[in-house]
Length: 568
Image (cartoon, rainbow, N blue to C red; front, top):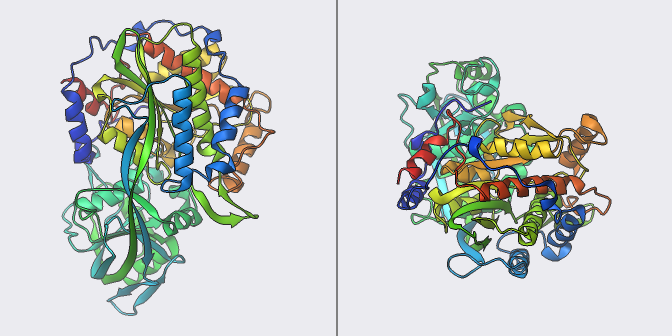
């Protein structure tokens, strides 16, 4: 399922473009042949240092109550990041270029309290939408108060501007000072026309973060996304829990002045009431928005008024990174990434208030440290440098990896690949290796070869409509052109087949995901996580032994950014 378009240049923030230009000043790699000429994969016993026991040792530590849920800006951050730095040092890795194991990441915490209601006036009977029940709202502006008063409401379909698809939901629409209402996901997801975008597989245009960015680019005062559980792939409760907690944002020079004053979501029922008050039918507008040639429109003279009171706290979080210097080509880098953060101490559920994040993403950290240990124990050191990177604030919007991509300690055009580890399943060995964003790059060829050694088969992402490729840290590396791999076993258990793993995943999602119940369980079978970590180790070892650079496949939306950086 390859992407059919290049990544649009107008979606790249200026900071990312600046990072690319800086990286572009470096010399071009000596060779860029494809993976077809790559060296043979590592022998199976090379990864023997990675085992269920090594995974357990690290997983117990990073997900223990002593880590206080690993939330940025808390004592849990200090404990968990210091633990990671100490482990990297103990394992004999070098710090970053500045002599530190920490990369500072300046963030601002915005604790917003929206007005109790959003007031809708005009065209007859006014509406009063209730906070949490009908809407949620927040802001990226670093101000004590933001307010939208009598802002005209307009409907802009999916809020997408995609020249490569011949699609512009803002065509002919002036939204300066207005509040835009848009649908969740992208036009292809409705399933009415498989030729739209990538059909049911979500593109980046379907991500809510993109919709907020695009509305701001057009000068909107506010934007509200209509929540519909099926295309969103999560219920209103997930939107609500994320909205009511303090938000971490990247610190910017203009303090978020270029963002919409008000960002938020409407429930589907509230949206239908809104459209009815504007003399419009939701179902008809929905159908029109999924048709090429859709024309945005004003919502019947309706206006919106609402405000948000903010408390601000500026602080510096930190990524943790360490380097194993290459023996012959130390100026070329392979990155292993995982996020260290989770949700800290919060609302108690069943008497437990520590959100330990064992699976999400303690498993990734345990794999990262086990892979580190395996490289140190290998008889032959890697020819290229290996960077081990634990990033902050993934749960807040991939902020730590975004900062790294914008301020890379190592040049991006000398970075061979990012191998990202996030949420591995503690349910024993798997037959499959599922690749998120399948069809993107030649890294899949490396993964396929390593999977074959383990008698596993490769499986494309089974839920592409949820947009998982855009929801973990590898995306920020792909965004700036670095080929990235995000894969793990998780759909066919060796012992229980597909049905048992589906049941276990469903139970995790319903009862443990982002809850205190996501904590270490001594009964877990961690050999499957060790299997995934061994595969990642072999992929990295093979990449480290080569002189070639893996490429994005033709048609990938990230190929253009990579090509541009490699020209310098």
